[in-house]
Image 1 (cartoon, rainbow, N blue to C red):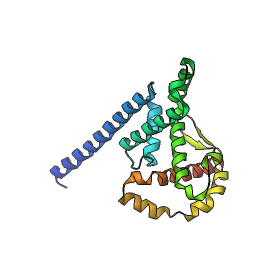
Image 2 (tube, rainbow, N blue to C red):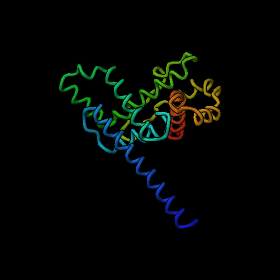
Image 3 (cartoon, rainbow, N blue to C red):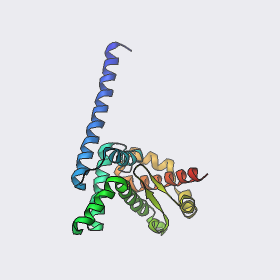
Image 4 (spheres, one colour):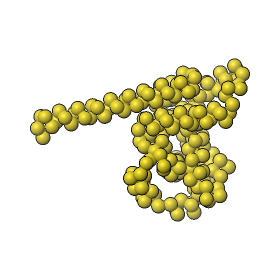
Length: 195
């Protein structure tokens, strides 16, 4: 490799890193605007990384992770009637949001999308899944029970084929699939924790 090729490779790597950093900062600002409260950097990083790492936004990047979290927050706020809360209730809500709230809201959206993906199976994940969050993790309390109920449905799914299709198509068309895949990952993590 010549010096020029090495410099070009280094420049491309730097551009990619700067783009990712910019996407992260834009996502952070967008979420703060929607949340209307300060969120600790570590909490934001955990939530955005969870979304990005599990491709819940369709693609593994901070831009899509920010879009996903923004949509999750807006929907959650509408459902809980955030605008109708009194000052003390809103303050308590903001304190929860600053800690484990972001991941809990991500988990809620992920379950809704996985539920929609399994729509034909007549199963309600909200009645079945005991999903918890702390400031760093989203985890299942009842992974073995969820696995037993979902095993017949999961066996029907061709994960390799869907992964290939998701790579070729628009990732946002596969959000339900990625949500179910994330749920399967959480089931496996629960089993490992309890082993």
